[in-house]
Length: 474
Image 1 (spheres, helix red, strand yellow):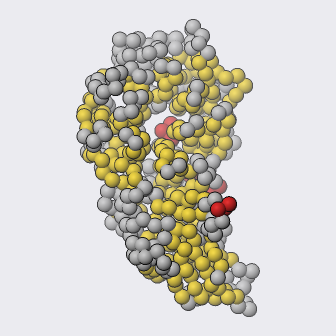
Image 2: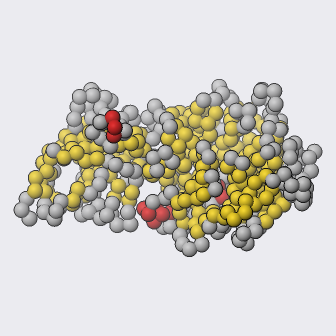
Image 3: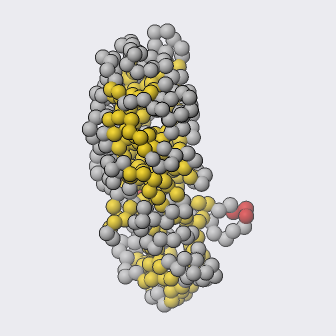
């Protein structure tokens, strides 16, 4: 028998005849080959969701303050979500359900949502949870923003629809601390509009539509920031809310001036694309990418960048540790639907996600096997099993998969090079660990792609499969 290894993530090539490897709601983890394990990778189920609290409107953003508390913007409301799952209303912002961003400087927390408006509330400095009331920023030198970042107590904003960005005074404390009209700068290396900002370490990243500049705090009296000379990233940003940072890295959906959209990663003073050809082909088939949203979170050592294209209901996830991609979705009424989590944040020793539709805040748990009771569809398509041009008799297909909960796994396959799949057959995983689910007498094919699908709610792990096949003369 021959082992079929699953040695990577999702890769559905432009031609299914080249690769049709879908990896849905499963993430690959490499096994250390020095340990002598026969499998190269194990595919674990992506985490499930347990209800933490209900805010009843779209969760637009989750943010963890410098004091360690979780803040949720849900519809028009800004809420403190406490460690025991209770909530406290802090106030209201502009009506809307689209993404927004937050940041605090230890004194106040600022909320922006792409409009000309902005809001703030005070942050407690005594270690308690006595946050202030949400107040609108009323300053003629505040122009609104898509995004907000902070460096050395300065808030940093993009100025929407211009090639400008601007900053607050140091130690901004609300309307009692007026903005300085001179604290504004332009992208100078290339005259494209600024769409978003973020801070990575001590470096400010100014994202334009076609290029990106890096600035730092020079301490100058007239304007405290200066561009790092001779450094410009020749990639712009397609979607301001796709910008997300994690562990000294920044990710975004963008494109360079020579071609189509890609997913980029910036680290130190360098950028590189991290999307595969297959991911890029998918992205460029979606049309408008300006509404893409991106978030990062870390779980069990994996650092995930989760990017959703709302107008397509597609969610792709990049694991910055393994460099592999997988796909996520939710499952309702027998159909794949948009992935419920709209944003992520880590607080109180847990990871939380906000629901884009129901207004719920969930705890994201690796040991949760449902999404608040709803099943999770998981699917993995195998690599092509291509002979030397002769047909092969597939006598036996045996799963290398964790057993114990008696789940049912559906196995189907394609004999037309990944274009279509036939009627699935059911395999029972069994209720003990010493079960090897097997299918017999599977016909003949020159090129076959096997595929596994299951929705049963139980923990498992997929290492691959074994195939017993004999060649025939033609």
